[in-house]
Image (cartoon, rainbow, N blue to C red):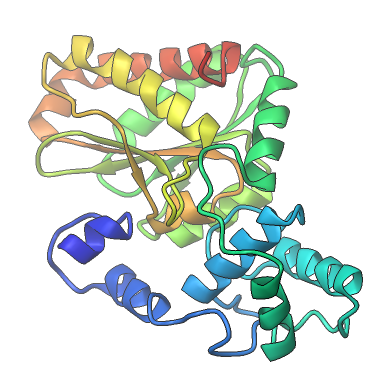
Length: 283
């Protein structure tokens, strides 16, 4: 459970697919293997370190998520070209050594990575209304009625809404990315209690937009459910890690509470999104 919590997963003490994947990823260090663009994408703490080092040197490797995607490959290629290395897009011994030589791994704080700066700038330039904004509502199962209400509420505000029904967060993330959403709100049923989460990387740097949206949901929920809602937390579940947009994940329960307060919860989520587009960043 301590390991799960440290990796941004739900600390249930069960070694399921997500936990096993994280156990494998945690075993890799930069230089242990060749890193390059392939399908499926390579994942691991070595990729995370590569992204962090590239970003610290000013190369846009994308979000520091430990997934070697197209943007990471482009940043690696550009680094190799600038460093006078073979520009093959493969992070091998020579490239790893040069990355280490040019400076220590920098533990990024919020907004200090290239992707963090890019996210903030995009949010500052975004429209301040839900009209024509593309919002994805992800239903992890058991919350069909709530998702329909959220969908309807957002449509009434002028948003273009896609509702996804799939228990696999990775599948939801892939479809949301294809849709090109501006924001993703995942809704999962829980036996009890509320959890509102946003993406945070292994160094503790959050998605600025996700943290802001989660905070607004946290403000809106308690008055309508008359229940204690814990503060939002940074996590790295597949749907938060793999979506390429501002994303939050809400685990809501118990079911009886949602039956009683479902319309009010849906309205609270819609209000939170409307407030978020008006002020997508803190301050």
